[in-house]
Image 1: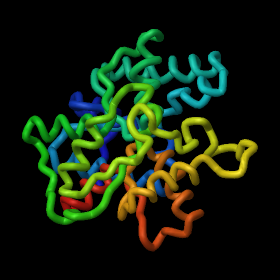
Image 2: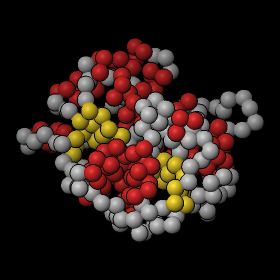
Image 3: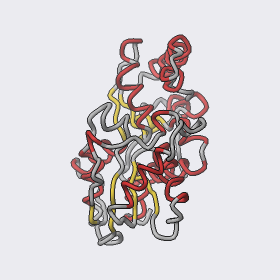
Length: 259
């Protein structure tokens, strides 16, 4: 799979159309790497001229900021901004809503001003520009529900681009009772993925998975690698692996288009 780096591009005297910010999960987590690969396949099919930072990409600082370590966040952010501005990056796309939120909303005050897109927004633009089509036959009739990632939905009010892409797959989209502004967090945004459970009689990702299962889905669609992990763990807890799969929208599009 051809994934050029910014260093490669600069060596050739080229400037890509967009920088793909892969993010920590998409770079290091084996399950999330599949989402990154699916999105790269879509970029190639649409003939998008893109590049990644490769080893020059480091943490956005999101985790440090959420944990209250503003000093560490600013150190990490300034390092990234220096690299991004050095390459004269104008447009960034990412599959990670946490990176999306940080790059879009928290980097500008530190001197990092870019057009930032979640991958569902970017794919939607590719379709509207006539650069990409989605096959609506291979998944036709599948029952799908969508879990809103907190840092995409409530934090940035991006609700429609994921749903538009799901509908274009020809599937039957059924909303959970708690969706969009009232969606329940799966726990990843609150760091439950990395720490012991809070006191109580049920993990929050199990509670959110129960919301999803009430729609009787074949597929739980997500737009966040961390949500993907939490919902997959919820499906395993409920012993529904044989009946329900959890997939990112990029994976569904890549599957539909036989990429």
